Image (cartoon, rainbow, N blue to C red; front, side, top):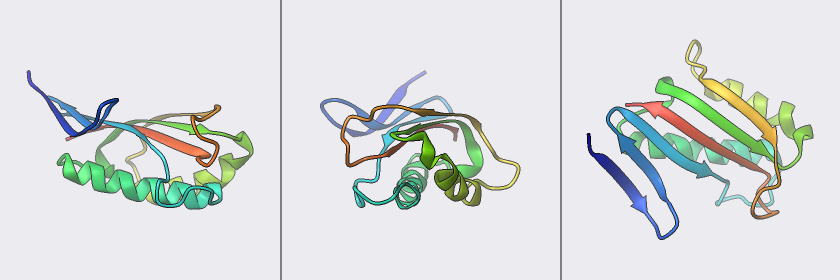
Amino acid sequence: MTIERKRVGTRMSQIVIHGDTVYLAGQVAEDDPGAPAADQMRNILARIDGLLAEAGSDKSKLLSATIWLADIRDYDAINEVWDAWVPEGCAPARACVEAKLAFTKYIVEVGIIAAR
């Protein structure tokens, strides 16, 4: 089976497709760093929508999600945005943890695995 990579950089690819499985790199709110967690989450989910579309998938095909929060106190705020974004009956397996992110301006990061 072949491996297809899109938006390939030196350190990582934004999209990797293996068979009918789509792996996205962890997404941060590049367009809105420093914003509150809910706003960063909205920005991230819009980016994920675009990447999934580019890979021939969409949010109804989510398999797994990992969410990293710089401060777990933002859990309720990001969940409100997440719950409105995920189609009913399509919730993926999910983990959400508090973690120190690479850059302090980002307080939310989301990694996604989806089917095509």
